[in-house]
Length: 344
Image (tube, rainbow, N blue to C red; front, top):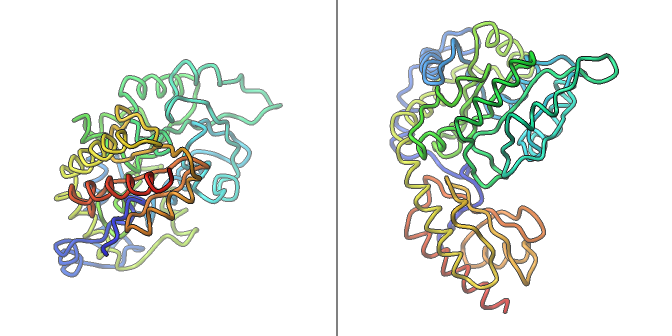
């Protein structure tokens, strides 16, 4: 039985063509800026994201953590949504690595607006941590893959800069938003001092992220990359996979979105599940299970060859990606229906 793996879009594996591109990569010492494939990818991503420079990194988590440490000094404060990746999924890195405080905002589906940010900004007084950075996550993972509207992003960035705060975009799934809305990445990121994109999720590469910003920002980012052990050597082998993904796997994200919508529609017709199909904007499908714990549901579904992720006592996440096709979605819907019938 072939596993249908909805656990995450990080479960993708390199395609044969991507592996061939990796094998043929022109490489050099990346740490000494001598890897031509890495250098080309950085230049390409900087232009793609509308920034002056870019740095290749092993992971998106490192991209976020380096951005925090470049923008902020220990004891300063970062404002973000309460569901942000930096809070729940980076091992306490903001405190351990950058030494920053976090002020979470209670947005809707991971999205807050300019008015909420303005209300959270304090006068700069010595009694409270100095506010330094505002972070948004496009798309919002815990928001169900919700897409930040461009006007909201521009408004948040405007309020932040007016108050003297820097801005950072966690763009792990930024390209999902771009494909869904036909808005360029540079346009989404135009109000943000730094931004990164991930290649190991929907784009299907085995690893890698690119963090972009000003030349001075990227110089400091590279220093931290060295300090934290993120500098590598013949990294062009991985960067070649990222380049291949940019050339061949961006437009096809639309297939993931279509599969996610079909999955959501199918789940909506199963008794015992609660889902709002209209909230499925990209490749993340969240739903709630009644009558059994989420963990038990996930275990029963795995026994039928379908893996999902437990996200709470009743909450389940399913993610479509490169290795999920339309036939697998139909098989998964049938398997979920069987599990729920057995539970009743």
